[in-house]
Structure formats: structure tokens, C-alpha cells
Amino acid sequence: MTMRRRGSLLSRTFGVPALIAAFSSVGLIAALIGDGALDLLSWIGLGVPVAAIAWAVLFRRS
Amino acid sequence: MMRQGALRAWMFVHKWTSLISTLILLMLFVTGLPLIFHDEIDAALGEQQWTPANPGGPLLSYDEILARALENRPGEVPLFMSFDIDRPVVNVTTGPTPDAAEADMHFASFDHTSGALVPPHEPDGGVMHFLLQLHTDMLLGLPGMLFLGAMGVLLVASIVSGVVVYAPFMRRHDFGVLRVSRSPRVKWLDYHNLLGIVTVAWVLVVGLTGVINTLATPILDLWKYDALRDLTAEHNGAARTPQQARSLHAAILRAEAAAPGMTLQFVAFPGGSFSTDRHYAIFLHGETPLTTHLITPVLIDAETGAFDGLRDMPWYAKALSLSKPLHFGDYGGLPLKLLWALLDLASIVILASGVYLWLAKARALAPAEAADEAPAPMAAE
Image (cartoon, one colour):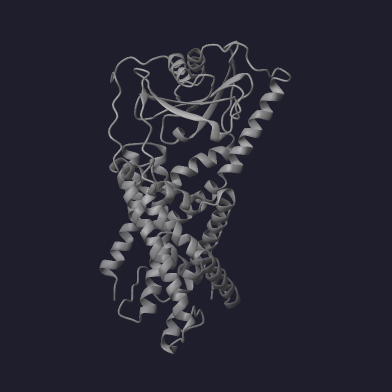
């Protein structure tokens, strides 16, 4: 398999998980840095993995 | 494409790191769930609301509080003074000698507005305290803590290897696939993969910070050793018990002036294990969510009242301080705690489904399912 193909497979497999991990990380750090808007940002960030689970359970069951 | 041999090695790592640690991790995630809401549960379980004698009124000086505490414990010396965060209460720990053992210490709380004794906290209902002990060291002290730390290391290895073996499983599927109408094994494999990959960042952070927390005792010992060595080098031969201690109140004001924008947290009196023989060690913390966990000790000469230095925490003590909120999730209000709880529940499902998948595989494999289950990088697309 060529490198190019492998790259696309990698992004297909880990693209969405990487995005979710990035949101989670922002969420984990935001509330530590400040209050108010940063708390809100942290709820959104860590809400993303929870929302992804809910989405899969609601719409991806087959 | 990952080679077959490498994949087998990662599978081996994922299987065994998980199997060895699963029971312990299940215990940690189950006891951790109520601990997320420790404050709320404690508040709900009674604790009759205490109110200060003069709410909003002027505060007594720290010297007056100290005098009141020593009146109550004749013949004893002060060891520590600490300050409640959400109410005007000063706590004073006394003991027969400056280096008294923990069992000989006496802890009392005083109304900062009147100097009256504040009734001690309810003994915690027992249950939450027991859960915390179980979660921290399984009631086994330092060896228990270090053992749980080792389990945390296995968790991290299990997550990393889990991410690697996720790839071949998902080659023929899109993200989020949940084949619930197939066999239970396929169904739970999909749940295991989905929940596992989605919670990776959170579980990694909770796992790593948990490992750091298990090292709290050696880290604090090292900090104390480092700081003390530093000091004795600076005040070589000058160590002596102060003859006549100067005003504690003045010392605290002096320390607060030396560390602007910081809040008083804790005072260690001369001769104890958190100070030197001649200093008040006055610990202050920052005021933002980030710096509130970072403590700066200021040393004030108890005899002369002179400012004798301020030391920021070394990096390893800072790492420990920041590991606490990141592990317990108590730094972003109730919504963050609720998300923490949901992710904790997801982790319990990951662990349980992992055990189920291992047991199901140990039983006879149906050939059709084996094709789904086996990571088959060579399979036709």
C-alpha cells in the first residue's frame, strides 16, 4: 500500500476521534484557566465526546 | 498498513494491561462516581448551617484568635493555623510540643468575627470518607497508593494500545458504527470501540493525573526536603527557637504584602515540620482557578518580624497541585461535574464490555463472528 493511501486511511479512521479529543482537551483546560465564559467553553468542549456517544446511539445503530 | 506481527504485539499489550488492572479500575471508577459530587453530597447530608456571630462584621486579629485557642489548651503550643474558604472561620491546631506527633495534635475552629468556638464538622457520615480512602489507597497507606498508581500506568498503556488496535477494527466501518442487531459480541465490540475512542482524551488525563496524585507523599516530602535544605543553606547556623515570638498578625500582613494578589491559606509555626525553627511559614495561594492550586510559602522571622524570603513551588509540586482538580473535575461548576460523571459511566461500560469480549472470545468462536472480531488487515475490502 502506498504512503498516500495510508494517509487517507489514517485520517478516515482517526479524523473524527482526533477532533473529539481536541475538543475534550480544550474543555479540560478552559475551566482551569478562568471562570465564566471559560467555564462555558469547558462544558462545550467536554460535551462533545458525550454528544458523540448520544449521536451514535440515536442515529448509528444498525 | 501495520504489519501483522506488530498488530499482534499491540493486541497482546491491550489485552494484558487491561485484564490485570480491570477489577481495580472498576473499583476506582465506581467509587470515583460519588466522589465527583463529594461537596454536594456532604452539603445534603446535614451539616446544620453555621452562621458567624457578626456576619459581615469586623474580624478579630489573628493574634486574638491565637490567644483564644491557647486559652482553651493550656500548656500547648500552636502548630498550624488554617482558614476556611467559604466562611469566616479560623482553624488552629495545637500540640504539647512544636514537633508533636499527629495523634497528639488538637484541632479547633473559631469564629473569626467573635472568637467563639465553632462546632466541629460532622464526622462525614462515614460513607464518603470510606469511599475516598478506598479510592486513594484501599486503606493500605502508601503501598496502596503506589499500587493504585501502578494500575494507573497500566490504564495508560491500555489506552495507547487500544487506540492502535482501533485502526484495523475500523477499516471497513465509518466512525460511530453500532451493529446492535448482530451477535452480542459484535454489538459490545462496537460499543467498546466507540466509547473507548471518544473518551480517550478525558480518560488519559484522569488516568495520568491519578498516577501523579498517588505520588503525593513522596512529592511533598521532596518539596519539604528541597525547601528546608535551601533555607538552612541561607541561614547557616542561625537556627534557634525564637525567644519571644512577634505578632503573628503583623507577620501575616507582611507576608500578604510580599505576595500581592494572593490569598492566605495556611500558617505553620516555628519548630514544626512545615517550617524552620525560627520562622513563621505563611502559605498563600493565587486567586484565579489556575493559580488557586499553586501555593507560595513566605518566611517571616518570628523573632524580628523580618521578611526572609518567598519561594515559588518547584515544578513537581505544581504538577501535583494541578493534578488534583484535573482528576476530580471540581473546577468548572456542576455542569462539568455532570459531564465528568457521564464520562465516568462510559468508562465503566468500556471496562465491563472489555471483560465481556475477553470472556466471549475465550468461549468457542463462531466462524462468522471471528471474521468480525479478528483484526484482519489482510481481509479483502
